[in-house]
Length: 364
Image (cartoon, rainbow, N blue to C red):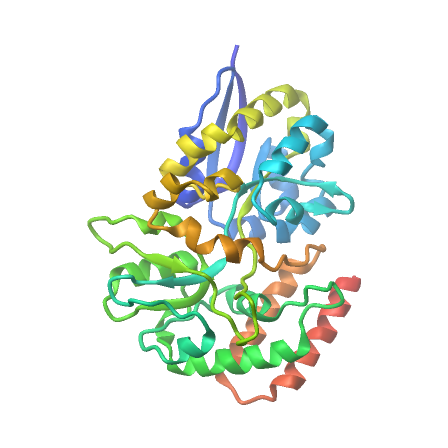
């Protein structure tokens, strides 16, 4: 007897192809798709009434928990399984799904902001933001939440004391202003997928210095050139590495699945098997959160060096706040950063106001 489950993922080949390509005996998951924006516009409580499995991102955990839409992973899976999966996950994906002393999703897909470029048009990608200023044919990803996420990658406060490192934030905004003035601003409404598509099709643009990476675009096709990636540019000469803001997705279980929990555990054990992640997920364009995939020379070569080029940035990525209400604040943050890029407002004052508003939002 086959148990049928219903899941919801995001509507990009990276999000649905791996899940649709995988099957395990005794369990069949029907995967529906929706745009990434749909996870924010549709109440999670409604989704949890219709689906057993949800592909979620870590910044939305607070809202999902508040809505009662997802279960702690400790309530669904055995401790021995969780230990194995934690050891297999590429850092910092596992910890990004922990909140209030529990895990709320299992890392499924891993990504961060890195430097994207056309290897046929640019021999050496920029190692620093000063190098970016020397380039022509640059585009910035500022649509939706991404202007704010660039700022967090450059200047997010990693001590937990606040949202931004004030001095770095001022320097970062001034730097982004300078790059914005020299960039192709016609792409201002494009998300990371759109930026990849644009660079792959254009012979005028050569680089987006900080954008969420899609290994999917590392292969040649009839209508686009293969893209390449490098580590996020350093902001200061003394910085050991450049930084990005963590993205990716996790697999969460809803209360709707309570009566089919054995089928859920069977399916997830099989899906997260290292062999499945290497031989199925990675071959159809998935971007696995399994560390073995990121360490595989075979996978790396198949996707034009994406994994080796971006692993260092991924493992040092900034992890966003996850309180209920963060998504709304994230959108407001990005709106403010976009305004700052195009005006002459005093940056230090603007950063102070962002920090004050963040404290009020996070205090609830």
